[in-house]
Image (cartoon, rainbow, N blue to C red; front, side, top):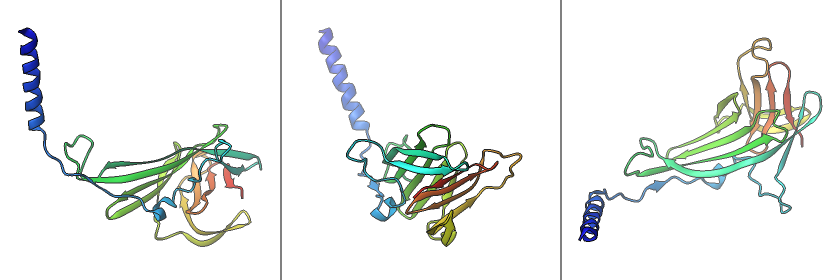
Length: 197
């Protein structure tokens, strides 16, 4: 009798619980396009030998600094005005990121972050522990620019206010483009990373 009562109460509880749930429509998802994904500069497939891609930089003493892609992801997040706590989410936006890290872990990691909304597309670059910076995709700072003897097109320049005395080690200037990703990163105090071709 006890088992029958417990089973009946469990079924009754389940029926009440299920009947009280809201019916949600399928959420609309804003997807990234191929042109959007091109902003993630480090998306080449892992080589067939299984070794990660290597992005090579040169520092201020002409030593090579090797970075590898550590993460490449894309996922859906609740759209503007929604949160993960909402019972029904009608709009999902898509975010994606490509992260590269110094193999020796002496220099900060760097990332490109994308967020696609129905009427908005955001591109940001991040230097680990030193800041996240917006890229205005419609207005590169330089149509062409020579950096370390090489010519680059459609380059975005980010300048961070500070000085070599009080801000040593912090980000000073960053050059980035859609094709190559991080081209040059300068730090207060004289350190820098220059992309090797």
